[in-house]
Length: 350
Ligand code: BDR
Ligand code: CA
Image 1: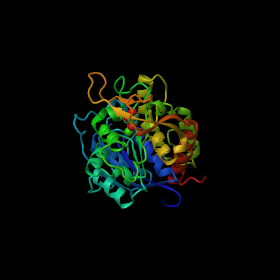
Image 2: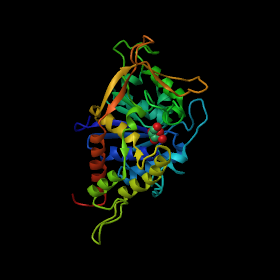
Image 3: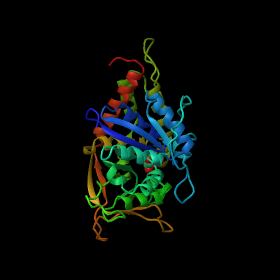
Image 4: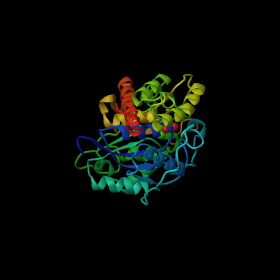
């Protein structure tokens, strides 16, 4: 830890809400971002890398190492979702091409090397399909005890799916990767944990992340903190534009249209920022220890995360599944932190 902050690795498929999670991390004094790895999912791995580099640059964090790994899921073909995140993955937003390229390290190697160099210190938060994490743990089966904790945005444990009737997007893109990860972290998995099993991963599924609804009123409040209008433009002749608020506004404009069409409200679920916030402050969620597995067969149910709430399988719990989230505190924190970063980046005194 550095100055009481949490050292984190972020694995993402940027993506509108991934971009907001990156901004949240950059704006959080309790986050010590060690590296970001890029996963194909919402868009291709190349688009994810470009978006990730561009968002970090927007936030003034071009010092953070960014790596790309495997560009397709473990076994099934890649499917992306331009209808949810826009053709480039950042909605209606346009960012300048990043001024640097990705690391020469493979994402899976980066995860293993960083964890091994700082055993028991790093929190890994995954915001996309878990392809590279699966590769990493297949190469280094002791990864679960080399990390301090794994936090995952993925799955639907009591809620309906958002990709199929029963499957959540991050799991649906690469269910085999999720299966590898769950097994690797299980107390009864392939490794003999002589010194005790690894810390149970914290899983945030749609059950809680769909409670994190960012509405136009939240954007107004964010702009107020940043000292600009909701679209990022300057207030009056002496005001200044905010590129961060403009980015959030333009990215979310697309996401708002998507949610209005498919979920019946004007706003957006911001799944990934909630998961990132819970990685920094697990007190934002309450959890239940449970055994989780993922359906890999099934004509209708491939990619379904199955939580054995009643202990039918008689297997030890391998996850802490979030069952409630303090969304009001999270949204206040998001507005205060990202709005504060926006003000700082555009030179507005607060
Ligand atoms: C997840 O799917 C992606 O579209 C979002 O970025 C989030 O990680 C929600 O199901
Ligand atoms: Ca994501």
